[in-house]
Length: 226
Figure (cartoon, one colour):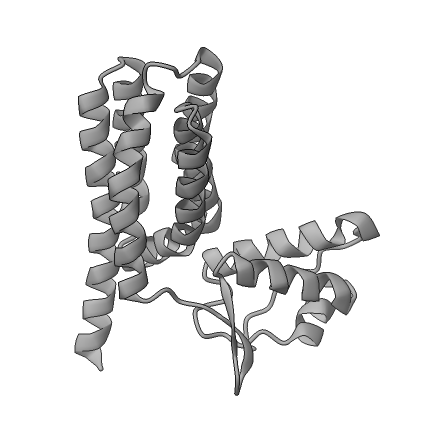
Protein backbone atom coordinates (compact mmCIF):
# COMPACT_ATOMS: atom_id res chain seq x y z
CA UNK A 1 0.00 0.00 0.00
CA UNK A 2 1.84 3.11 -1.23
CA UNK A 3 -0.60 5.86 -0.18
CA UNK A 4 0.09 7.21 3.27
CA UNK A 5 -2.37 8.59 5.78
CA UNK A 6 -1.59 11.30 8.34
CA UNK A 7 -1.45 10.13 11.99
CA UNK A 8 -4.50 10.93 14.05
CA UNK A 9 -2.52 12.03 17.11
CA UNK A 10 -3.92 11.40 20.58
CA UNK A 11 -7.30 9.72 20.33
CA UNK A 12 -9.27 8.58 23.34
CA UNK A 13 -10.26 4.89 23.35
CA UNK A 14 -13.98 5.62 23.13
CA UNK A 15 -13.54 7.82 20.04
CA UNK A 16 -10.80 5.83 18.28
CA UNK A 17 -13.23 3.79 16.20
CA UNK A 18 -15.13 6.88 14.97
CA UNK A 19 -11.90 8.78 14.26
CA UNK A 20 -10.35 5.94 12.26
CA UNK A 21 -13.59 5.31 10.37
CA UNK A 22 -13.83 8.97 9.39
CA UNK A 23 -10.15 9.11 8.36
CA UNK A 24 -10.44 6.03 6.16
CA UNK A 25 -13.78 7.14 4.71
CA UNK A 26 -12.31 10.51 3.76
CA UNK A 27 -9.20 8.86 2.29
CA UNK A 28 -11.25 6.47 0.15
CA UNK A 29 -13.78 9.02 -1.10
CA UNK A 30 -11.03 11.59 -1.71
CA UNK A 31 -8.88 9.18 -3.70
CA UNK A 32 -5.94 9.04 -1.26
CA UNK A 33 -6.73 5.33 -1.06
CA UNK A 34 -7.77 4.56 -4.67
CA UNK A 35 -10.01 1.77 -5.90
CA UNK A 36 -8.23 -1.56 -5.69
CA UNK A 37 -5.74 -0.40 -3.03
CA UNK A 38 -4.89 -3.18 -0.57
CA UNK A 39 -5.63 -2.28 3.04
CA UNK A 40 -3.29 -3.87 5.56
CA UNK A 41 -4.64 -3.51 9.08
CA UNK A 42 -1.24 -3.25 10.81
CA UNK A 43 0.05 -0.70 8.29
CA UNK A 44 -3.04 1.49 8.67
CA UNK A 45 -2.80 1.31 12.44
CA UNK A 46 0.85 2.37 12.34
CA UNK A 47 0.14 5.26 9.96
CA UNK A 48 -2.78 6.53 12.01
CA UNK A 49 -1.04 6.02 15.33
CA UNK A 50 -3.67 3.72 16.84
CA UNK A 51 -3.96 0.05 17.79
CA UNK A 52 -5.27 -2.62 15.43
CA UNK A 53 -8.66 -2.82 17.16
CA UNK A 54 -10.22 0.47 15.98
CA UNK A 55 -8.84 -0.15 12.48
CA UNK A 56 -10.47 -3.57 12.40
CA UNK A 57 -13.78 -2.07 13.60
CA UNK A 58 -13.58 0.75 11.07
CA UNK A 59 -12.87 -1.66 8.21
CA UNK A 60 -15.88 -3.74 9.25
CA UNK A 61 -18.11 -0.65 9.21
CA UNK A 62 -16.78 0.59 5.87
CA UNK A 63 -17.34 -2.87 4.40
CA UNK A 64 -21.01 -2.57 5.42
CA UNK A 65 -21.07 0.87 3.76
CA UNK A 66 -19.76 -0.63 0.52
CA UNK A 67 -16.42 1.20 0.52
CA UNK A 68 -14.26 -1.87 1.26
CA UNK A 69 -14.50 -5.47 0.08
CA UNK A 70 -12.62 -8.59 1.10
CA UNK A 71 -10.80 -10.41 -1.68
CA UNK A 72 -10.00 -14.07 -1.07
CA UNK A 73 -6.45 -13.56 -2.39
CA UNK A 74 -5.57 -9.96 -1.47
CA UNK A 75 -7.56 -9.42 1.73
CA UNK A 76 -9.26 -6.06 2.27
CA UNK A 77 -9.22 -3.71 -0.73
CA UNK A 78 -10.89 -0.42 -1.60
CA UNK A 79 -14.02 -1.26 -3.53
CA UNK A 80 -15.06 0.37 -6.79
CA UNK A 81 -18.75 0.16 -7.70
CA UNK A 82 -19.56 -1.53 -10.99
CA UNK A 83 -21.54 0.23 -13.68
CA UNK A 84 -24.38 -2.27 -13.16
CA UNK A 85 -24.51 -1.36 -9.46
CA UNK A 86 -24.51 2.35 -10.25
CA UNK A 87 -27.38 1.93 -12.69
CA UNK A 88 -29.40 -0.17 -10.26
CA UNK A 89 -28.97 2.26 -7.35
CA UNK A 90 -29.88 5.26 -9.48
CA UNK A 91 -32.80 3.50 -11.15
CA UNK A 92 -34.27 3.05 -7.68
CA UNK A 93 -33.41 6.58 -6.58
CA UNK A 94 -35.06 7.96 -9.71
CA UNK A 95 -38.24 6.09 -8.80
CA UNK A 96 -38.34 7.00 -5.11
CA UNK A 97 -36.79 10.44 -4.65
CA UNK A 98 -39.35 12.27 -6.82
CA UNK A 99 -42.07 10.72 -4.64
CA UNK A 100 -40.27 11.85 -1.49
CA UNK A 101 -39.69 15.33 -2.90
CA UNK A 102 -43.40 15.81 -3.65
CA UNK A 103 -44.21 14.74 -0.09
CA UNK A 104 -41.48 16.93 1.42
CA UNK A 105 -42.20 20.27 -0.19
CA UNK A 106 -45.56 21.00 1.49
CA UNK A 107 -44.15 19.97 4.89
CA UNK A 108 -40.58 21.24 4.95
CA UNK A 109 -39.88 23.46 7.94
CA UNK A 110 -37.87 26.70 8.08
CA UNK A 111 -35.27 24.87 10.18
CA UNK A 112 -34.88 22.14 7.55
CA UNK A 113 -34.63 24.74 4.80
CA UNK A 114 -31.96 26.58 6.77
CA UNK A 115 -30.01 23.37 7.30
CA UNK A 116 -30.20 22.52 3.59
CA UNK A 117 -29.08 26.04 2.68
CA UNK A 118 -26.12 25.85 5.08
CA UNK A 119 -25.07 22.53 3.58
CA UNK A 120 -25.40 23.90 0.06
CA UNK A 121 -23.22 26.90 0.94
CA UNK A 122 -20.65 24.67 2.65
CA UNK A 123 -20.43 22.53 -0.49
CA UNK A 124 -19.89 25.63 -2.59
CA UNK A 125 -16.95 26.63 -0.39
CA UNK A 126 -15.04 23.32 -0.54
CA UNK A 127 -12.97 21.75 -3.30
CA UNK A 128 -12.19 18.64 -1.26
CA UNK A 129 -13.91 15.74 -2.97
CA UNK A 130 -14.47 13.60 0.13
CA UNK A 131 -15.91 16.50 2.13
CA UNK A 132 -18.16 17.49 -0.77
CA UNK A 133 -19.45 13.95 -1.24
CA UNK A 134 -20.38 13.61 2.44
CA UNK A 135 -22.02 17.06 2.49
CA UNK A 136 -23.94 16.06 -0.63
CA UNK A 137 -25.23 12.98 1.20
CA UNK A 138 -26.43 15.16 4.09
CA UNK A 139 -28.03 17.72 1.74
CA UNK A 140 -30.19 15.14 0.00
CA UNK A 141 -30.96 13.44 3.31
CA UNK A 142 -32.19 16.71 4.82
CA UNK A 143 -34.69 17.22 2.01
CA UNK A 144 -35.90 13.62 2.11
CA UNK A 145 -36.40 13.71 5.89
CA UNK A 146 -38.87 16.56 5.41
CA UNK A 147 -41.22 14.13 3.64
CA UNK A 148 -42.21 12.71 7.04
CA UNK A 149 -42.42 9.22 5.52
CA UNK A 150 -40.12 7.11 7.71
CA UNK A 151 -40.12 3.90 5.66
CA UNK A 152 -39.59 5.75 2.39
CA UNK A 153 -36.84 7.86 3.98
CA UNK A 154 -35.13 4.74 5.34
CA UNK A 155 -35.10 3.02 1.94
CA UNK A 156 -33.77 6.14 0.22
CA UNK A 157 -31.15 6.65 2.95
CA UNK A 158 -29.77 3.18 2.26
CA UNK A 159 -29.68 3.93 -1.47
CA UNK A 160 -27.91 7.23 -0.79
CA UNK A 161 -25.34 5.43 1.38
CA UNK A 162 -24.70 3.04 -1.51
CA UNK A 163 -24.46 5.99 -3.89
CA UNK A 164 -21.80 7.83 -1.86
CA UNK A 165 -18.79 6.10 -3.51
CA UNK A 166 -20.59 6.40 -6.84
CA UNK A 167 -20.83 10.17 -6.45
CA UNK A 168 -17.10 10.26 -5.71
CA UNK A 169 -16.53 8.20 -8.85
CA UNK A 170 -18.59 10.64 -10.93
CA UNK A 171 -16.36 13.52 -9.78
CA UNK A 172 -13.28 11.47 -10.66
CA UNK A 173 -14.80 11.08 -14.12
CA UNK A 174 -15.48 14.80 -14.45
CA UNK A 175 -14.32 17.28 -11.81
CA UNK A 176 -16.83 19.76 -13.21
CA UNK A 177 -19.49 17.59 -11.55
CA UNK A 178 -18.47 19.32 -8.33
CA UNK A 179 -19.22 22.84 -9.57
CA UNK A 180 -22.16 21.67 -11.68
CA UNK A 181 -23.55 19.87 -8.64
CA UNK A 182 -23.32 23.06 -6.61
CA UNK A 183 -25.35 24.93 -9.22
CA UNK A 184 -27.88 22.09 -9.41
CA UNK A 185 -28.28 22.02 -5.63
CA UNK A 186 -28.89 25.77 -5.60
CA UNK A 187 -31.64 25.41 -8.22
CA UNK A 188 -33.22 22.46 -6.37
CA UNK A 189 -33.23 24.43 -3.14
CA UNK A 190 -34.77 27.45 -4.84
CA UNK A 191 -37.59 25.30 -6.21
CA UNK A 192 -38.17 23.81 -2.74
CA UNK A 193 -38.22 27.26 -1.13
CA UNK A 194 -40.77 28.37 -3.73
CA UNK A 195 -42.85 25.21 -3.08
CA UNK A 196 -42.62 24.34 -6.79
CA UNK A 197 -42.87 20.55 -6.57
CA UNK A 198 -42.92 19.97 -10.33
CA UNK A 199 -39.77 21.98 -10.88
CA UNK A 200 -38.02 20.39 -7.88
CA UNK A 201 -38.77 16.88 -9.15
CA UNK A 202 -37.55 17.80 -12.63
CA UNK A 203 -34.28 19.21 -11.23
CA UNK A 204 -33.64 16.27 -8.88
CA UNK A 205 -34.25 13.81 -11.72
CA UNK A 206 -31.74 15.51 -14.00
CA UNK A 207 -29.28 15.87 -11.12
CA UNK A 208 -29.33 12.11 -10.49
CA UNK A 209 -29.08 11.27 -14.17
CA UNK A 210 -26.01 13.50 -14.50
CA UNK A 211 -24.15 11.37 -11.98
CA UNK A 212 -24.92 8.18 -13.89
CA UNK A 213 -23.78 9.75 -17.16
CA UNK A 214 -20.47 10.82 -15.60
CA UNK A 215 -19.79 7.29 -14.28
CA UNK A 216 -20.75 5.74 -17.62
CA UNK A 217 -18.32 8.11 -19.33
CA UNK A 218 -15.51 7.05 -16.99
CA UNK A 219 -16.21 3.33 -17.49
CA UNK A 220 -16.42 3.67 -21.26
CA UNK A 221 -13.23 5.71 -21.35
CA UNK A 222 -11.40 3.12 -19.27
CA UNK A 223 -12.66 0.31 -21.53
CA UNK A 224 -11.44 2.18 -24.63
CA UNK A 225 -7.93 2.54 -23.18
CA UNK A 226 -7.66 -1.16 -22.39
